[in-house]
Amino acid sequence: MSDRVYNFSAGPSMLPLEVLERAGKEITNYQGSGMSVMEMSHRSKVFQKIFDDTKANFIKLFHVPENYKVLFLQGGASSQFSMVPLNLIGKTGKADYAVTGNFSNIACKEAKKYGEINLAASSADKNHTYIPAQADLKLDPQASYFYYCANNTIYGTEWQYIPDTGDVPIVCDMSSDFLSRVVDVSRYGIIFGGAQKNLAPAGLTIAIVREDLAGNELPYTPLMMNYKTMIDKDSMYNTPPCWCIYMLGLVLEWLESKGGVEGMEQIKHAKAKLLYDVLDESKLFTCAAEVGSRSDMNVTFRSASQELDAKFVAEATAAGFVNLKGHRNVGGMRASIYNAMPTEGVEKLADFIRAFDRAN
Ligand SMILES: *Cc1c(COP(=O)(O)O)cnc(C)c1O
Image (cartoon, rainbow, N blue to C red; front, side, top):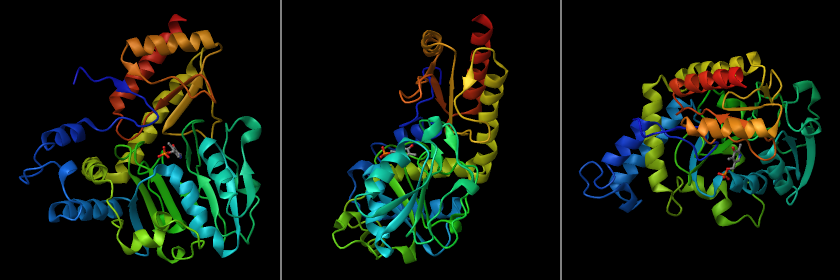
């Protein structure tokens, strides 16, 4: 569709065109129900089927083992920063945090309200341009859990390995690389993420919780922040984010048609490589993240001057490549290339970068 731009927004970010068109078609009358999904009771049979099918498809595509519960929550990934310690830290009163960016830093600060936090690793010494190695993790065997953020949306770094924490359960924020790669869920205690980067519109937060970890919440844990409440009521203690769950269902069908998470993993790596190769070859640009820590989802880069960065962003915008300005913590540019960004969009951006490099 010629009136659509290539949207490199970090989030909320683009959704597959096929999904938007299908949602558009069904917006006033969902499959003969005579009403929009937005207007339905969450207890209706029609919606219950949307909910069940979506959850089942998520479990299938992400290979979630049987002893895990998939929860459809609200409050954003940021609410999980409180929900995780409220539910898990009571076991020993202690937790390990790896701080590799903005969101793990906020999560770490929040957790300090509820227990004793050990900074297991930090990349703050080099403005979060790298991911610490396993050998550099200072792990506390007494920790109730180990926390990290798989993909650092702002800094453009991504963990290339799952930390080995022995018997300590791992909690992971996958907001910005959810369903972009195959994950061995059994290595984790909890995986969570806001949907608006890779999965659905803003308003839905997904948490995958190993069942035995729920039910140990601190006594003052708010009802709505208790994993056990939500597990017992299958995410429907109260009204869930119905529209977003429906949209997730459509995105998952689309994902399946693209070869599932396995298919996405192939595509996303090739897409990222297109950009990193052009940037590495260019005279003007350098990547913010160190080789070996680079994100396949958020590509951060800059030129030698802020003026040239601004010129790049302005010319890119005029050419139909929008939302490329980097986050203020990093500066420069950031191209977010989540699942829904077609390879064609990345190829065209790579061409644009090459041409800009030559002309400047
Ligand atoms: C966007 C983002 C968040 C914040 O998500 P909200 O849903 O806005 O709370 C947290 N963690 C990561 C990795 C993110 O990319």
